[in-house]
Image (tube, rainbow, N blue to C red; front, side, top):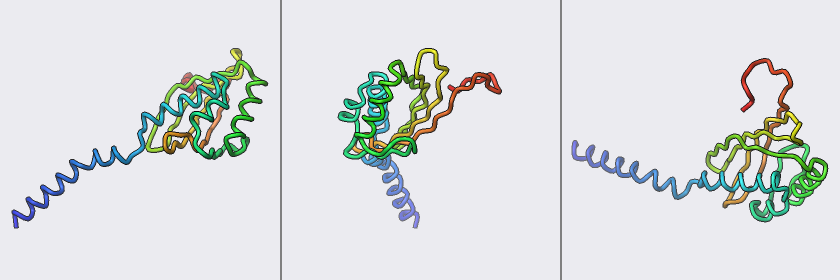
Length: 153
């Protein structure tokens, strides 16, 4: 009986030892996903090249969850092209990037001009096969008189 327990325990231990390497082979590469999202966002917003960003970093389809923006890759290009014409000095400063599985979240300061107080923006991107395929966001204006002394970042 002890022999069975020991052999069962040995089998379980060997399976557990293999689990991390097996998971690493099948799990999304979160660091690579972070790099894709950062490059996509910086290219589209700060370099003001939304068409190049889409061509290099977006998958075959782009699903948008922001109710003020249309679905699709061309809609993204059109939106940011018009935005850059209206706000040529707009900038994005990514403060932090967090990834889990195929999701990457950025927490950023977005400003339409150097004088703008800006907005705190949380974007969530889904990455599939190394390409951005889906996006959600939450935007909060930075108040002139906050109720506390903490920053939004």
